[in-house]
Length: 310
Length: 294
Image (cartoon, rainbow over all chains, first blue to last red; front, side, top):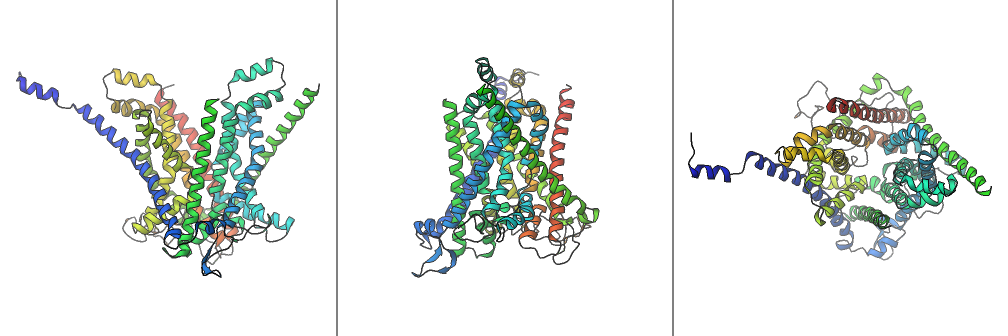
C-alpha cells in the first residue's frame, strides 16, 4: 500500500507518540514543582496577612508589639491600648535557642571530630547509626523525657517549679545534638584527605592537624550545622512548650517559668476566636517565627556562599 | 615535647566528649525503652484511650498515625517525584531554578508549628474541612514535600549519566529515559528516602494539633465504608495521632495513669522509628541486589 505525498507529509509533521509523551511528562513534572512553590508562597502570604492584621486593623504600634513586656491581649493598659508586648516571648525564644546552641556546639563538634579523625572505625560502627537514629526521634518524646526527668531534676536542685528556660535548654540541647553532630561530621568528611597528609608530613601532631587545618577548612560547614541546629531549636514547639512553664513574663532567671513564641502559639491559638485581636496577636507571633526562620535560612546561604569563595 | 603533651590532652578530651555524648544518647533511648516497654502489651496497643479512668490504651491513636502517614505519603510522593524529576532531569541552571530551590529550602526550614497553623487557617477554616484526617494529611504533605523532593533528587543524582546517554542513544525521549531507565535504577534509594521520611512524618505532632485535631472519637473497626462517621477509613473525622496523644495527655490530660501511658506510647513511637530505619536499610540493600543483580 502506497501513501500519497500529502498523507506522508501529514504523518511526518504530526507529533509522534513519544514526543507527545515527552511533553506530557514535562508538563506533569513541572506542575508538581509549581505546586510546591505555590505552597510556599501561600504559607508566607497567609501568615503575613493574618499577622499584619494586628497592626493594620487593630492599630497596634509595631514598636509596642516588639518592645512591650506585658502580654495580655484580652486586657487594655492605662492608655486604653491592648497589652500585646511580645518581648518576653521573643527573649525567651532567643535565650533557649542561643543557650542550647552554646551547650550543644562543643559536644557536637567534639563528637564529629572523634568519629571522623580519631576513631573512624568506632565512629562508623557505633556513633553514626546512633546519631542517625536519634535525629528521627519525635520531638514530643524529647518533651516527655524533659517533663519526667529534667523538670524534676531542676526542681530538686534549684527549687521552684522546675519549669523554665534551664529545662527547655536541656531538652533542646539533647534534641539538636544528633542533628548538629551528623551535619558537622559531613562537613569534616568533605575536607580533602591530602590536607591532613600535608599537615602530618610537616610534622604537626594529630591535634595540631585537627585544630589548625581540618577545623579551619571545615568552618563554613560547621557553622552551617550550628545555625541549622539553632533554626530547629527556635522553631521547636511541643518539646519546649511541655517544659518551659508557659508564663508570658520577662525571664528573670533561668529557673523561672517563661514562654517562647512557639509555646504561646500552641497553647493559645485554639482558645481564641478567629479575627479577634487576641487571635491576630498570636498570628503576629507566628509571623515573627516565620521571619526568623527566613533569617536563619539567609544566614545559612551566606555562610555557604562564603565557604565556596574561599 | 610540649605539643605532644598537648596532643595527648586534646585527644583525651575528645575521647571524653564522644563518650559522654554516647552515654547521653544511650541513656535517652534506654530510659524510653526501660520505662516504656513494660507498659506495652497487646491490650495497650488495641484498646481505645480513656479520658478519666486508668487502663486506657492507644489503639485508635496508633491506627490514626498509620492512616495519616499513608494518606500523607500517597499525596506527597507523586508531587515530590514529579518535582524532583523536573529539577534534576529538565531544569536548566538559571535564576528560576534557583528561586525554586530557595523556595523548597524555605519550606523545609519552616517550623512545623507554622505549617500546622497555615493548615489550620487554610484547610480547617477556609476550605471548611474541619479538624479532620484530610486536613492533617495535607499539613503533613507540606511538611514532608521538601524533604522527600530533596531525597528523591539525591537518588536521581546517584544514577550514572551513562544510563541517560544510553537511553537517549537508543532513541528514547527524555521522559521515557527517566521512567524506563533512571527510575527503576533509582528505586532502592528512593524507597530508602521514602521510609526515612515516613519515620519523620510518623512522629510529627506540632503540625497536626490544629489540623487533624486533638480528639479520637470511637471507631467501629467492623465498618469499612469511608462515608460512615464511625468508620476508621472516614477521612473527615478528627484524628488524634500517637505523637499528639503524648503531648495532649501531658499538658492537659486528667487521666490518672497519664505518665505510664505516655512512656508506653513513647516507647512505641521510638520502636516504630527504629523499625522504619532498619527497614529502610534492609530493603534498600535487598532491592539494590535484586534490581542490579550485583
